[in-house]
Length: 364
Ligand code: SF4
Ligand code: SF4
Image 1 (cartoon, rainbow, N blue to C red):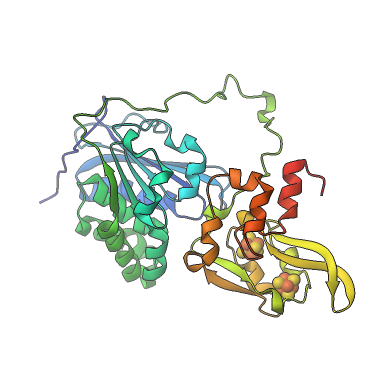
Image 2: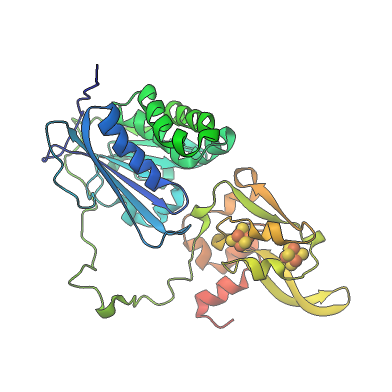
């Protein structure tokens, strides 16, 4: 018999709404599509799902929107979701921009993909929301050889509370099984672990919480107020070009003893991560590779492929001892004293002079 799920909570239109906050490369778009299909095919609901993103490339912001309603109610609203019942943050670094929390409040459940789960409670004002869940989806994805989006899918289903693992497995077989049959079992394992390991960090009593959602103020730029021609008058906004959320568990580790300062990595890197400074190598004056400014590294690992002497190797980010220097808080970047805290393979190098000079106004 076909299932008919009853939605536990809906808005004034009768919709249950989910918003995904992500960045290109983490698979939120596909995750949203799978949630949409899941509603119609296996839950007996109506559903609508769509994404919003700019150019399709790694590191650009992506938002996914999913609406569910009961089967007898058509979904006639097709605008982005402003006040979600469930907000899913695919990388904790996205929280450095508080606009991802817009429209969320005491009615909202939030899932954050972050390392060290409950230890990261400082990421959010937990009491402002209904329930907050943490999950180290990146670690699970690496361990199961699946992807972050399927692990998050498992977590989303668990938190929604009206989806069973068998429904997820069915949609996974329909979608991923057809596209990537060789990795179906890994993806199903990723879903299972996301479903079982998502960890509640805070739960409020919905009946006691004040109703309504916070952070609803409108953006100062809309179609009526945007600058003519769509130009961005906030100069220098590429200074804090934080690409770290684009990494998917791996990053390059620099072994300076092996480096012959050939510069191939610098030529290859699309994001000016390598920091070269004048110096001396084998008795000759030349530009020396001082290491990486990991803030700008998106983890594509092209530099590892191109290095002729294996002075760059692939590392698992979560195992790296300099993890402590990674903070979503951009104040770290703005204070040059912090550069001294990290070694050449720290998240921000001691020689991150390019970044420093950019902050000062671009006189490199
Ligand atoms: S490609 Fe390798 S050897 Fe050449 S500068 Fe980069 S790290 Fe050093
Ligand atoms: S992995 Fe290497 S090539 Fe890719 S962005 Fe990072 S430093 Fe640059």
